[in-house]
Amino acid sequence: MTDSMIRERKKKAKQSIDNMNSRINEILNEKRQTFSLQHSETMKHMKEKEDIARQVSIPTIVYPNYKYDERLCIDRECDYPDKTMYYGVGYNQHSDDGTKHYRKYVNEELENGTIYLPKLPFDVFDIKRGQSRGVKSSLFSFSKPTTDATGNVSTVKTVGKFKGIINMLN
Image (cartoon, rainbow, N blue to C red):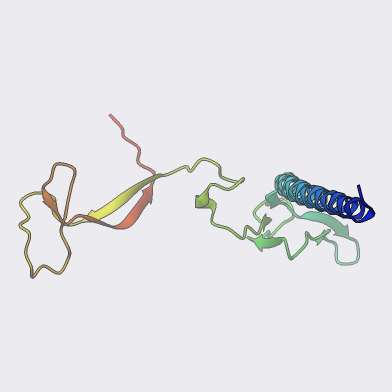
């Protein structure tokens, strides 16, 4: 073998080693990114759980504390709850009335299955408008008729929701 052939083989070997090293680095970077994404998702999930636990541990209703004021000879409210988290409801004429209390702000609809109300206490029914039998398809109808499961023409569409508690008594 000549020197030029040896140099050529060394050059090719070095290139293949460099290619292998770069591919290894690419694979390692991909693994690091996947791990960091999984780690960040896990941390986000843990933070959400901690937030929920923190919200549940904070009482929803807080009653005021009173302290006797000797100068005015009355009970005065003390230790007010945080105004950014609670709002006052009611009024006490005397400290032992129990009417006044503070409720926690909830910045979401309770009907969407929150931690405060996981199961809705009321029933939800769709309110529908239209006709499902005896409708003839026409070119001039304002509401577009569709066909139902039996193949009949129907103009029924949902226009709202009824939410309420229905009790049946004998």
